Amino acid sequence: MPIPVPTGNVISGARARLFIDGQVVGYATGIDVTREIQYEPIRVLDNIEVSEFVPIGYECSTSARRVRIVPGSLSGPDLAIWPQVGKTPEDHLRSILDRSEGYDIQVDDRIANQTVALLLGAVAQRDSWSLDARGIVGENIDFLAIKVADELGFV
Image (cartoon, rainbow, N blue to C red; front, side, top):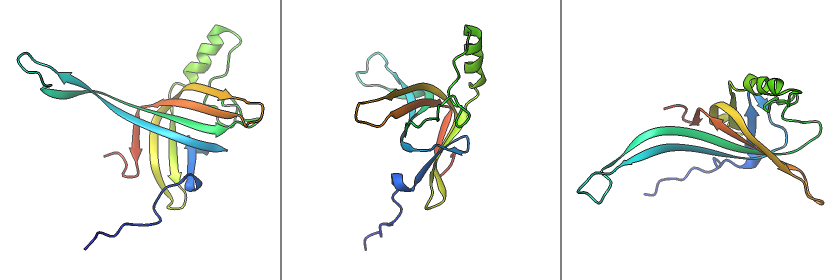
């Protein structure tokens, strides 16, 4: 007898909501989440094959996309995830350091009322946007994170 396949549980963009530090990111259009375990291969004499792979690191990152709205600066009061440019190099550094503790980024399935991804200690690493003559300004924000969990939580 075949195993029944659950239906209605597919997460789609229409049911997803993106939060940064508990605040909904307006006009979010997409998110990519990456987690990576780095392994070092152990190569020994007298063996052409790798003997084993030793885990040496764990990294997480995410890239979020949104439609740029005005006002809606990443440095502004709405999100405040990107440091403001200081008038002096010292002011600029202070602004960057003030945001170095990190944020929590959360993706929720609003229909199932469940968190499907939670990134802890995320810091904004890169922000880019483009503008075309007959297009909408799309903004990309890249983050690094300490950990990422899915709907099963941290196991």
